[in-house]
Image 1 (tube, rainbow over the protein chains, first blue to last red):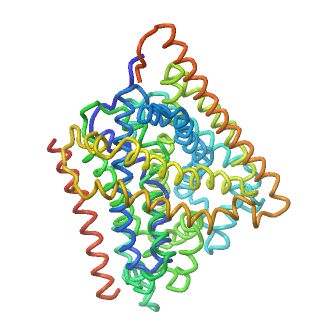
Image 2 (spheres, helix red, strand yellow; image 1 turned 135 degrees about the vertical axis):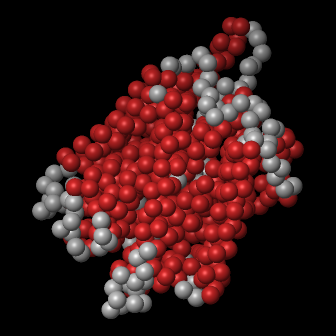
Image 3 (spheres, rainbow over the protein chains, first blue to last red; image 1 turned 45 degrees about the vertical axis):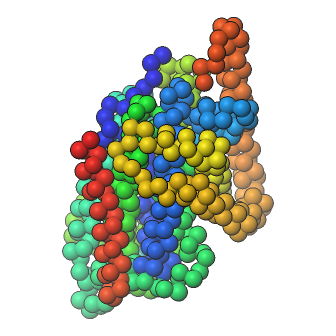
Length: 523
Length: 30
C-alpha cells in the first residue's frame, strides 16, 4: 500500500499550525498572562519558548520524518527504529497514539459546543442572557447539567455533537492530502482573518461607557501587559509560562510525529517546524492576547476581569465573551465570528488528534484508510459517551489529566532523552539538517541535549508532587463522583492496554514474516 | 497602560510578527 504524502509544503505547515492553534491560544493564554504578572509573564514565556518549545518542535519534526522513511507514522515504530536494540521502547511509543485518542474523546464534544454557539449567536438564542449568572445558566442548561428556562434536555447538545463528529469523520475519510491538508490550508488562514477582524473591532471599542472612562481597551491592554516584576521571583510563574508554551505548541501528543512522517526523506523540517510554531505564536500572543481581556476590561472593569481571568477557559469563552460581544453593535454577528473562529481552530486540532491512530492501523495492520477511519471513529464515538453524559461528574477532567497533561509531559521527556542521548546528538543534528532551508545555531545542540531534558524533568517533578499526586489519589473527589472517576480510569487503562497488545501483535506478525522470508529486517 | 507595558507589548509583538514574516518569506522563497 502506498504511503500518503502531503501535497505541498505550505499544506503541512498549515496542518501542524492548525493542530496547535486551538482554544488555548485564545482563552488559556490571556488568562495565564493576566494571572501571572501581566507583561512580566512574557519573559519566562519567551525563555521557555527558546529552551523548551522550539527544541521540542525540531525534535518531533525530525523523529517524525525519520520514522516515515521506515514506513512508520506513529511513535511505536519510530522509537523502535531509533533504538532497535531495546525491545520495550516501542511499548512506550503507545502513549503517542493513546494520548491523542483520549483528548479527542472530549475535544470533539467541546468543539460541538462552539458550532452550537455559532448558531445560537446568529439566531440570537442567548440574547436574553444579560448577566453572567444567566449566561452561565444557559451554558449549564446546554451541557445538560441543569434543566432550566433555556434547555430541558441534552438533545440539542447531542445533535450538535453528532454533526461535529460526522464532520470530523468526513475530513479524515478523505485522507491526509484531500482531507486534512485541504481543510487546514483554507481553515487556518480563515480563522486568522476572523481573529484579526475581531481584534480590530475590539480595539475600536475605546471606552464604551463615558461615565467610566477608566474601563477602556487601553486599560485592558495595560492589565495584560503592564509588568509586575515581583512575578519573576515566583517559581509558579515560570512553571505556568513553561506549561503554556508546552501545551500551546502541541508537543508531546504524537501528532507532529505523525504529520512529519508524511514528508519526503529530504524535505526540510527545521524551517517548516519554526514556521508552524511562529504561526501558532502569532495567533496566541498577538491575536489571543488582544481579544478576551481587553474586551472584558472595557465593559466589566478591572475588578471583574481579575475574577474572569481566574474563572477558567470555559467561563471566559462561553460566558464572558458572548456577554461582552452582545454589548457591541451587531453583537450577534461578532458573537458568531468569535465562536466560529474557535470552531475552525477546534476542527483543525481534532482531525490531527485522530490521525496517529488511523496511521497506526494503516501502517501496522495494513488496513485501508477508510477501514481504519471507520474503526477508529467507532471507538471514539463509544468512549466519548461518558464525557457527554457524565460531564458534571468530573469525567472530562479525568480524561484531560491523563491524555492532556500527565502522559503528554512523560512522553515529551522520554522522546527528548531518546533523541539527544540514545539516537545521539551527532546523528540527530545531521538528521535535523538534512534538506534544511535554515541552519539552526550550534548552541542548540547543547540546549537539546542538556537543557530541554532537564527543563522537562524539572516540570515533571514539580507537577507530579504539586498537582498530580492529589489527582492520582482522587483527593477532593466527592464520594458520589468517585465511581465515575474510577470507571473512567479503568476505561482509559483498558484502552492503553489494548493498544500495547496491538503493538505486540503487530511486531510478532512482523517477526514471523521476517523468519518466513529469511531476509533482513526492513526496519 | 504604562510605558513599560507598551514596551513589553511592542517587543513581544515585534518579535513574534518578525519571526512569523521571516519564516513565511523563507518558506515561500524555497
